[in-house]
Image (cartoon, rainbow, N blue to C red):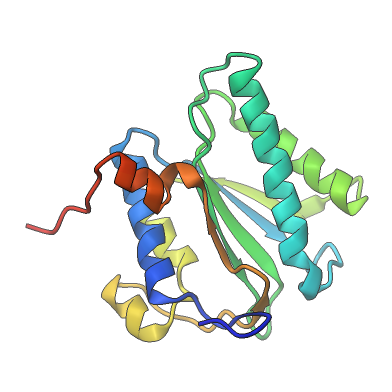
Length: 194
């Protein structure tokens, strides 16, 4: 649900598209396996500036990723991921970033993300403001990260909705590699239960 300068909830189409993106990644043999949480409040970042800062982090990381794949010839495949911003009333302004780290690169990916955040914020020590967690079941994690959906839409996906506050800027981002256009090009359609 959008307002002039931000959103108060994830809309039904955005929510559905994110669930489909995660399924498409799984069915394409590229499951999302790394959950990154960045707590902007702990870093002292103004909530109004958090979305712009994260966009720059995402862009710098994906440039590094593309360089590794295209210039160094590493078998990374496309960059797959999505990010959801939250700012609950009594909680920190933060983002959940769920991605695929190519096999054997988790430590390197974590180091690169930390270095980009450090460079952009000017902090030499991030502490627990940037947290990494291995993803066991991407579908279950998606239900958690999508808790900011509009309640009626959330129930359709068996998500327990929770007010995640007003977020200025873009609330949800899905990488092009698993977005609607990529799914259409691949002829992918969601399978209906049986």
